[in-house]
Amino acid sequence: MTLFFLDFKFINKELTECRVCPRNCGANRLMGELGYCKTDAGFNISSICIHKGEEPAISGNKGICNMFFSHCNLQCVYCQNYQISCNNNHILKSKTINEIINNIIEILKTGINILGFVSPSHNAPQVKEIIVALRNRGFNPVCVWNSNGFDKVETLKSLESFIDVYLPDFKYVNNKDAKEFSDANNYPEVALKAIKEMCFQKGTKLYLDKNNIVERGVIIRHLVLPKKADESIKLLKLIADEIGTKTTISLMSQYYPTENVKNHKLLKKKLLNNDYKKVVEAMNDLGFNNGWIQQPDSSLNYIPDFNREEPFGK
Image (cartoon, rainbow, N blue to C red; front, top):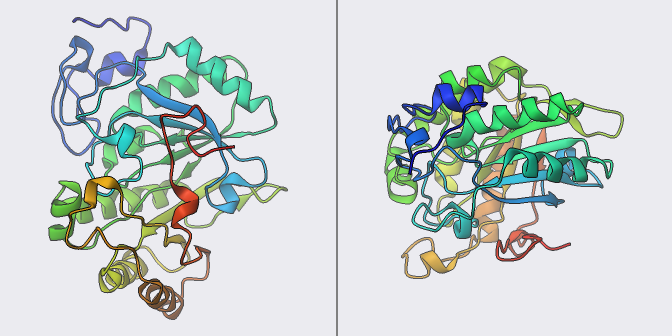
């Protein structure tokens, strides 16, 4: 089916031959062609909701208005959001721009002034259209790019005037794990370049408002995987060497084995407390003083269900 987006500047320009993410598929998403992410040019959003489970500087007491996009440019076999991120899953009916903006504004009017775009890497043009539409309605929330880190530097440069806070994952330090777990053997080098660009744009210092909510900066997330503590330590060393220890790290222990990895030799296991503590100690030894760690048994607090209206509960 042919799709027309005559009033959308960024969608029209960037999705006729899509090079938005590092996959560089070249699909004409305006005409309904589907590349790696199997996503057209619409506003394919699975959920817009208040989420209180992010880092304290993001969620605060009120939470963040998070927008979860369908599908993804990575296919992590252990993804906790697999209900919406798997590219073989059906995409919910695309929302109109007016529906999206009205939904966001309804949440912003509760006193929340921070808007997160979750899994946005394959939908950067849509993100920009949404921010422009919000600004045209008189709303200018702090905008957070919450990505898997598999981002294209050129795309990030186009986002500089739109995004205030970058919240990327940095998942792997070696290509073997990246290929096996996420179908992206070049992930380590791509993510490093992307995060360097994010830090170049925003710096490594977090700027907070009077309520200690972030206004500008970069927070690097890393999820420690089962039996991969040594790889996590190597990743932290890479960040220390290439980006610096002043950057903010969110070191996560919230891994849990989903139904999709119940037969996987390694990933079907839970993260051992001692393995996580080992990585925490290494982070301290390397000189990282800014950021957060989680309780070793935190995984049950972060399990979403996107079949519910409130995926993370109320």
